[in-house]
Image 1 (cartoon, rainbow, N blue to C red):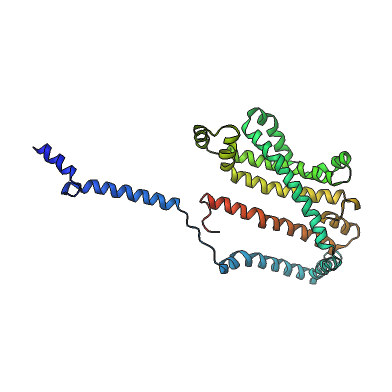
Image 2 (image 1 turned 120 degrees about the vertical axis):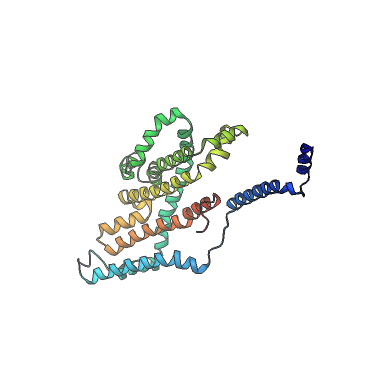
Length: 309
């Protein structure tokens, strides 16, 4: 009789014995709600005032501080004016090139070369990195070579590239590739090495093997490391190009930022030299802030690693 009472009490959810069952149900519902809250990343748009305060103002203040210190050093006459020109002289040099219509042309000559060479490096370095990361025999043979090439200064390739290819754009692209491909490949290898084996097993279970597994499982999972390799690859591309333009300057190659810097050295034009340095620095920062930083924020935000930035 007692057994019958117990059973009947369990079947009545609204009876006195239904309390523990309801408590367990409520606990499970609370746990699921908590997990859902963790998965749902709240993405709020940053107010314009906060963007100006935290992103625009600091670099503006830093640039103003550098210019102030520069001007103070000139006025203190720590060295001769022809060795350290005032900021106004550099500005006058930039205005003069702008009025002549050569400033944007010089910048575009180098930027177009750098971007095209970088795209070629991506097209070569990406499959090479996948092969090194996924094939043990290739990794054992080529992996140390890529690491060594990445540490080799790109300026070392300028002399043989000139002898092999002559003073032309092909030589420029060869130097860029030799400097950027190892960085891109090594970045992808590092990203693939950090992919969880669980993802690979899950992909194989779902039929994502071979090229399909590489495209849908490996590359998306390795994207943060790959993106870091791309950023480093662009830095190597830009530095390699500047080294090639400075050493192998020729009228047939057109006037780029590297040639502009070399022309300033040969004519002892210190305002022109400082202008070239500032333009090279400006292009590097602009490419990073306009292309790579937004991509990096988007990747991190899509993975829930960047809630507000």
